[in-house]
Image (tube, rainbow, N blue to C red; front, side, top):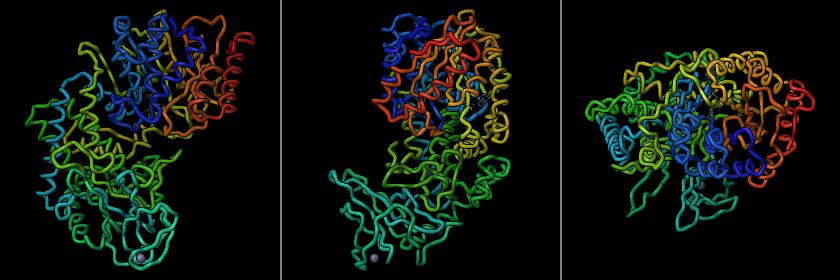
Length: 618
Ligand SMILES: C[S@@+](CC[C@H](N)C(=O)[O-])C[C@H]1O[C@@H](n2cnc3c(N)ncnc32)[C@H](O)[C@@H]1O
Ligand SMILES: [Zn+2]
């Protein structure tokens, strides 16, 4: 098997190929974009090279994973920390029987929903119809409840809110290849458009000059409508003009009737969502405690009343469409994941920097923070009747992504098993013998809990489940407690259990592939002792680029080692490092000193456990 003996050139080439996923996920892994994920091509390289000695076939299956199918038939892949299921899905596409567990049901549901779409249980066309019907019904329900995301026939895409100050640069759009800036004069509050790209601009109304900045620097003076802890200061409207959907930002004071009335009406409809969410105590959650300190006292405060009402209507609409179109539970699962995905933008803890990017959860390296000003995204902003979003990351975009997955050329054969289960890998043991396992544990101590950092996604999912009556109620407090510990002792104890469980069902020629990287020899020694004591030994390790930028924990270490282990004690352990690093340096920015110090730590740990002359660096 090539997995045991890939040379430096091939490793370099694989690194280069995986980097095409830099900044853009392959469509079939885009249903839910939150979960920290490895490059899917990395999985392909591992999964293919386990099955063959042919470099050509491995490289070919990076492009067309189905090429390896005849060899994968009957082979079993197991992933004990599967996350959103990147590896599980790739293994299934290639033809492996794949088993995955994760302690987090949100992750498991993402993997299952992707699997459902790839299995073509409904066609892309059918799912498009489902999506459109659900959105239409959602809109109807809101209208019947006395409000809609519309002002005088124009669609509301964003409502601009602040707790304190506001920026002067509000928004932008492109026109004839140029950027039009939408600015707000901090002196008189006039909102106007400007073609200038300089750092200062002049108000057409009062004639004052001011700094153009998207940072909230200016005090909001005047009679702006209030909404909970926020003041609303502007609204973005979309209107059709010929073929184009024009964007216009208006002063909130000119539409305060809509702001106040829709909020009041939505509040009634939102009460069901508040009941569901506020039964969860923020103080019980890692991130909840933090949000509490930032002034958020109830879970439901992570969303606006209009957003919550829209979630409720979407869940009710999904139930109705399910009944009418006789959809099965797996379709409901897909719809719940779609809602959860779009909550990434449709939440009040999303930061808004329109001139730079889309609203994303305000998650830093370690935790959430509550942005001082942000937008309230309309979760159903779309071109009427179509699955074309008019706000970034709205439900229309997530539905569209689901349609694309169901339509795409990749699929999972109906006869292939993909089993994604909620479970604790310290106790879970697959019910059959396995050939290949990828172990990608949470080891970054900067991320205290994956579960906690998915708090907004979880909230939307929980509302959906509560309204539709889905039985498996997800409980975030419990998930956090079951995540494996990050401290040295707790981590290595957990890993020992996981490795032993795997080894107890591993076939004679099976391989276990660990994803790991630390700069400390002690950390490396800890995890390698855990595998050693479980009867698993490294044969070769490859340095590769770990995950797309923008990963959950922006570690300074960009690389990760793929440590290939088997039952036999090694003759010598090869560490393939220099060539793939050289390749990566040309394509991404990384600090080779830091990467090298991690490689030295691995080398040192291997020497301590297996002996001085046992390691070879290439
Ligand atoms: C680094 S992520 C895996 C990402 C995945 N390889 C991918 O590319 O999508 C680690 C995962 O381990 C899960 N996890 C933590 N403790 C666990 C446990 N005791 N049992 C099973 N899964 C656990 C977390 O929920 C998280 O999803
Ligand atoms: Zn002015």
